[in-house]
Length: 441
Image 1: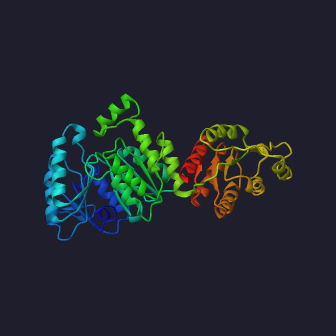
Image 2 (image 1 turned 30 degrees about the vertical axis):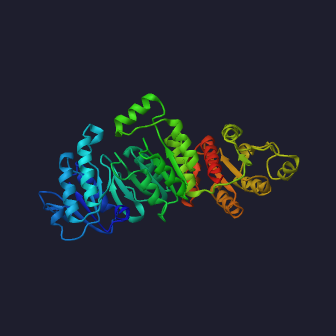
Image 3 (image 1 turned 90 degrees about the horizontal axis):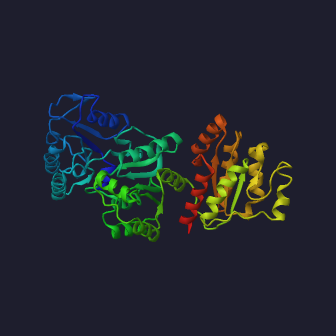
């Protein structure tokens, strides 16, 4: 049934509106403007025409089969709509409408779920922001984003999911699917893991959850998944746990237990939203590695130092360059460059120097952290060549770029267009390397 949810051939928007100020208009317009190739049916009691499409008074009046229904009507009308879906034979529904368990109306949500179970309807929501599958050109949500990528984003918070999606668009890397889970009355994080572990358009699953309903089932699904799973779960403190319960009525549970479950299941835990995005971006495009030797090449000594503490505290070894390596490097860098590790090329650095240093030190390291701390032109071409070389040897290259102004923007955009993620600080890049190492092991 989730195939019909994420890859439908026909969609009905129940609560579609001709009023551009209403959500029923926005969602319908995004489905149209997103380029959905299937059939679209606006449902509105007043019928007529909406956004150039013939509208129907009820879904029961639609002459064709419908795979997915998007529900945007007041909460009290949702049970009746679900009955209509059941009689129509619709087996997938997104309930965007709020006003259920999160608002104290648990009985109403249970009623909706009972109807869904009676007819075999899978439900995303209620109280959610919908879904967006860029590879199927289906944006039954907002904002409208069409850039295809490799990250599946699923979140109990619609805003959190939208933020991750926005960042992926700004970076030019996109995402595969965006799922706002809302109250998780039916479809939950386990369903997401099971479905997207088999989705050919997805390389990594990024989750924001406020509580896990079935811990054992969650761990089993994660262990069976061969793709990286990155998760952020708030509610670590007592006040945070109370806020979680008031938001989606999820039970946050003991954080130590959840942390242990993640470690046992191979899940990468992100401490915050920034890490969730960084780790997902990295796992979508970078190679995990099994060694521990890291070589840092930088044009900024300070930036290199910032990375060292993060790497060393996460079990990676920023090894000291021996005399043999230093001898190889002396003719490749400025006379005043620092030939320890980090290898500090100073402000005289050129993109070519980075490539020459990596080639000379290639056998010494399992992973390379390249930090461009100035407006270094040609950085993208150097990184592209370096990544090709590292991939052939099953090594990893992570890039940070900062302090480069307009040159930085141009070079980073070029790297992202080639599927090479770039991080804006040395610490964030270092944490990514540590996460890649954890997954590699």
